[in-house]
Length: 236
Length: 75
Image (tube, rainbow over all chains, first blue to last red; front, side, top):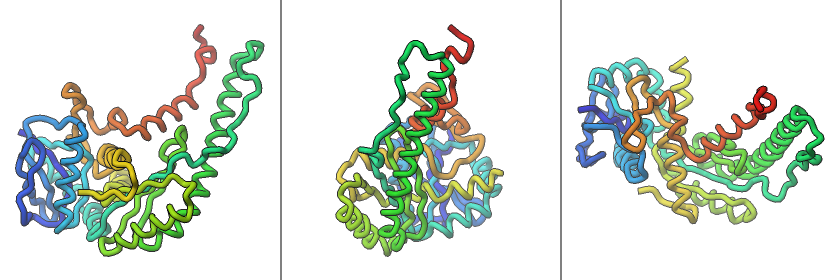
């Protein structure tokens, strides 16, 4: 029997019974002043949408009463000792992250097609058979870099347009040009629960003021995007 | 349950997958993900179970870095 771990929690006690993967009871594993939310599993969990929703649902229920750091979906450990050793090894960073996300939730922002209508590079007769392979390669590479520059410039403009609306009601944000090929700009916003109505209003206002931008927003989610930086520092 | 401010539920699923599969705390060594009930993939190889955006980003970077067959000396 392995342990499936949903998240790190700031309390060793859960007030409500939570149902996890395969209907298993989610229980706290206390490790000093940290705890993990886990359930017993006979095998690893497949990355199917319904299982990923279950992972998220457990985290959201825990977030109603506790500060929670979500673990990446699919995290299993062999036993309690291994789990506690991992948590203790990262204790300072985990405690800092818990303090950072306490009482807050994450919102996902997605802006698609940010470079739509902008001219991409026109290569000069790339298909000409007279060109040497090396020339064709360099031309293709130049086109890729040029297209990327167009998308990145568009992303900066869109970010500069939206940030004044969203930064006020939020605590922190992470912007990312998620996919250069599809020119999709994404952002994760950490928002205090008391400020969620203001944040939603800000998103609506930005969409109304800039209808040409294809903005979608979802949430609240567990704060997945606001734990990784500390993890990276810890792992150095 | 999460609310949708946007108009497309599919976008919410994409947002969730992007987070649950690519972000969050990673415990080293012991964490595994089962793919199609067959393979156990260590989190160090997490790009194998990635969102569309991540896959696109990886594909883009590999395409930019890989010379064409002629440049590699193959016919």
